[in-house]
Length: 551
Image 1 (cartoon, rainbow, N blue to C red):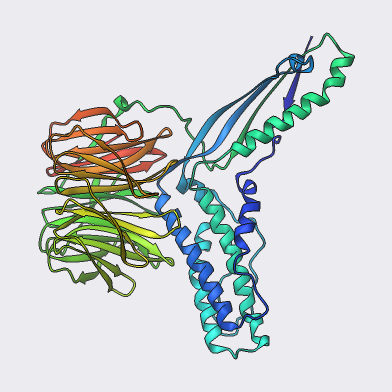
Image 2: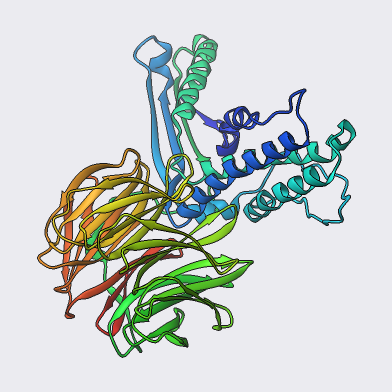
């Protein structure tokens, strides 16, 4: 005789957000009100929480295209008969990770905490205090500190005035909890506590079934259960080792009349597009539905080397850097030029965008040996970073473990330099390359943040950005490493590199091994980039005047 005991899907009853709830509440108590607070200190506490939130929002922004373990499918089996007879418990929990993009997890998140307090609107600011989605978090974290500052500067510093600021402080603490919830969705789901509690509860169940065994001594009892635990928004693929032999060319796009220098994927109203720049002095925008050009942007007077995308006041923007020493910013909806940023004394070779306090900033690297930080909202130069002794050829933006935006730079002096974008100071220099550095890429993994640097000798060096230490060298290219990008597929992170001889190599960076090599029919691979469509990674290969899409 057999009895099948089915454990319903609601048991074990875990949720990714509730698992972290206690920790989040503990983190949110910082900034509490004390007896001797005045208006200025209350406003300062609001700003301090907003700064902390901004750092973590930058982390979230940086990880949006990453793929993570969003949860696990568990299969639980137990031989109850042997367990009840005192033999070794035959209990097995099999785990199958379920993966999703961070962006999909963030889009599926909804705030479930207490609603924000609505203070008296004495200055008619008409603030929308709705907190439901990620966009609300970003908006309110930017707006509320400004309102608190205005109250502190305008109201008399009396106890009756505090009632206008205290709701803002309470609201910022709620936003902080929301930010920390969102941040947990950007990393692999940790289920150690869940597995421990599963085993504990099942053992209690086995003990409780002893009476059944006493009454039915000949009964053979088998328990099975299947459940999903975690956070996910869409059906996800199971993690298996990627077979890179599956990669094939999906499309070829032509339209430029000279060498491709950079490509960049973006979306407008959920439609997929790509931007490319070239030595023909143009930027072309492509509709990836039919791979046709939808616009050609002309205003640069020389070669265009680099592209970066950001949002300015809800307007999707594209920045382009050129040999004409300028940076131009374009509206990706209207295809019109918005502004031109002047300040470099030589050509602009690399651009990256980042956010601070919800506002976009640009960093540019130039042949004048400097990095410059720009604020597009005011069309102004914010800072100049000096330290390289020759051309700055490449940049890679990342966020450190504390949520501080940083940038890595490399160039003709064969040095990788790391910079703090908040203090605008040099963090450290990473030696080791013997020739100039053509390409950098920063990427997030379940092991933390890493940087890859490719040089003119064909060497790729890997760096751990947690402690800014050297990890390994990947050797195999005979030509200059022009292109370098990272991507994740089916749970595993890979690097793709392209060189001046037209070779594309795929690497497993954590096992330090070459996985596959592709010899194209083209000459130099001038650019490599990756993007995801329907959770599937695509590789953009720029060579000569053409662009190829691989998947």
